[in-house]
Image 1 (cartoon, rainbow, N blue to C red):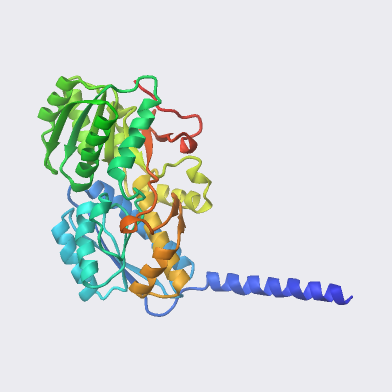
Image 2 (cartoon, rainbow, N blue to C red):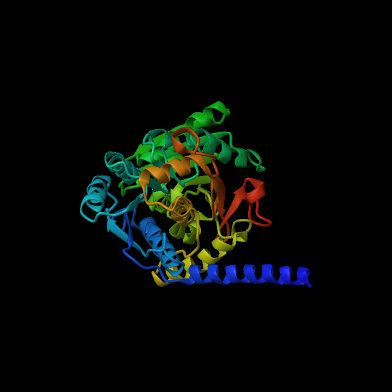
Length: 402
């Protein structure tokens, strides 16, 4: 009888604890809002991708506020349009900190703007979690933390990953043409690809650069056709890749195998002339990525919001996943430390790993970078699928060489 009472008492205590915990989890946040400031490229040449990050942030803030906010307080996200201009991003982050008096900041979209935000964060000793910075060796500030999981030397590791994928194909390339925008991150990666290809014995038959914001891709397409390499590496960001594909179509040329660094995912996957194009990714909408319950919930919400916003592609890919992961990292640090102090949060992140929808992130490597989790995806029948490495490839998918 005493044992039964003891078991019953323990069960009651556990049940009571669960009920209290559930009540707390469902309690509406209260008190002054936790203000989080960001800029995004909502207009200008990067707007197609900037809109993806805006939808992600809105979803995450809603989820936070439906589940007790941060530290029991509601979250207010103040986002400004930096118009795809790093100089404007710098000014706006200054205003967010000094005028809007935000508690925390999150990084903007793309390397140039993030570098500007990083300088402001350093001036005011602010934590900066960011999601799309592509040149790790420039991230010198001790309180910046990346969720774009490139590793500390992506200019070496990722081109090797791409060429590993091609080496395992039925037609490994013997020649390469490298054409690239001078946009900082893609230019950096393309220069790295140039060196990696040379070391691997793949002959370079063309190297060509253009200014970011260029609109005339006809001459570039002509040079690419003339070179006619086995493999075309394109250091493109946003719609640049589509513009080059359209220019090549006008002169009746399709590369034997083509890769685009950071394309706007929707426009490229919808282009019939981009079938079998390759790109880098950290997350795609298929197993094993969708096995994560939080990822599955997010995908459903993003699909709905993206369709409502009229995005050409509503799928969650590397941009949306990196953005969502940045919010996850911020929430994990605040929850674990029960603090909004930038120094406290940064110290915790240096010592701990954070599970995100695209993998486990650590920040104890060079410039706070951890592992290179980049994968290779390919457009196949109007859908992006991971094809390399094999352990994260879509079920039944493999690299197709046209």
